[in-house]
Image (cartoon, rainbow, N blue to C red; front, side, top):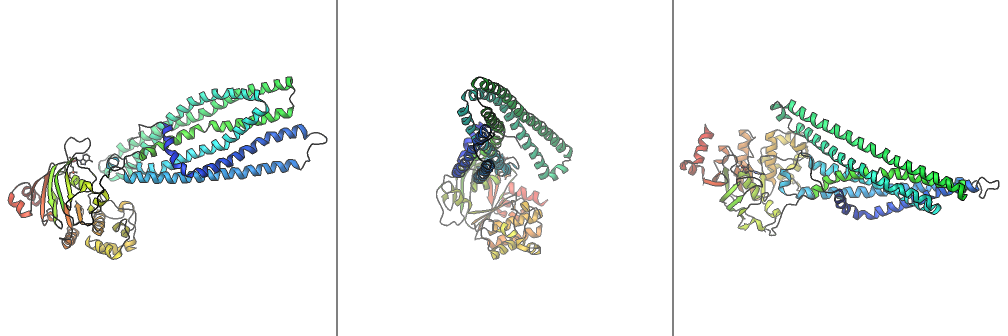
Length: 580
Ligand code: ADP
């Protein structure tokens, strides 16, 4: 997995997140109101202290004794209630925002253009959709809690201090810009090392992901020492970067505290001077100190808030990168009321981004509805590219594909794709029951599911499973053999009510008996479905109505098995090779 290198500024990332929180602004406003109430009560603490010290110790106290506990307990009860409400409401807002963000990310993933998947490092989609939003919003949310919980009382306290003694308070403000400059520098370093630590962590996950996914390949290549070394490098990098991050974080706190201490000592000296010259009372002094200490403790928390915000925004960049992936283009608007499955391909050209030679180079062929055709040719001839182009996964750079006479470019992608049922070389199955895999994304009809499984020569096996059709098959069908996975994918294609079936090396992992059973099933549907077979086995292609031999992105020969044999060209040569 390659670490994400190019990143937008953090402010921009923040702006991208705002729209996800906006619909829940009422929750946020209520949380702020609750924290404002908490802040208001805090101001009363030094005021109470002042009253108690100035009036409470006199022989004839200015207020009765029971008032002290009543006011104190009442005050903290109110603080507790509003503090709880503030935290609860803020987390409510965070939860809703994460949900919306995740949904938007999943939508972006589901509609991303094909090139995104070609370049997608293993596991990163899961990180971007599942962990990143939670982590980012959690970090930012915690920081917001601190900002509200400490920022609002700090502001209230500052107002109170100005009211009490503006000269002293002004002095405290002198220290703030100094603090800001130092903190900015520290924060920049925290951000840099935070980025590096995150990248290192992603690289490490990717190495482990590779090792788990490719475990067979690794052992067959005797690459265990190589992978071990790769892991050791990545793990060391994580250790180094994490330590740097810890050091940078740890440094930020003492530095800000030191600045605070310098400011505090200047302020206390000034207060003592005022006491001697202007005759202020010890009660005033105690109240000022209490208010100042309360303000300092709040300010200390506020100084720590920059780090989670920065870290949260760094993580959020992973999500916003996914939000920015362009969606698949779907300019067509037409629909087909009915589709027979007649395919006409005219002078089709396709060249992948960054590749020197075209994958399809003026390919033309006609497949009448209900015909079974085979595509044969060497690897790299463009067979799979043709299938991709038919389904609109690879937009052609020239030529046309006509479906029942309609140019597929004028139809919506959905309209085109639902006409094809494809079994491709890489089998994709879902971690769900056999039934749900066969009737994927549809309401299952058990009788039709059974028929599809019978046609795919898998019914006997499914019946032997402990829960039959309802047995779960594990991630990507991990509990099945290669042949069983392939037959399940075939059953899924057969179940789909599409006029065109495409089998791209779909029976390569089947034994002769299963392959014959699948062939027979296809023969039963002959005439009703247009079938395109891509195969390297002679037994699969020889009965096709027409065989197209492809080379370098074009059709070089076409005809029935016997016609092509008589021609004595590529096909005849291929058959000779296949039979020897
Ligand atoms: P076949 O299915 O006949 O083996 P393909 O259609 O897979 O052939 O490939 C045709 C050509 O296009 C090959 O040269 C291959 O390297 C290239 N190709 C296939 N997929 C891509 C891709 N995603 N990006 C770049 N080139 C590709």
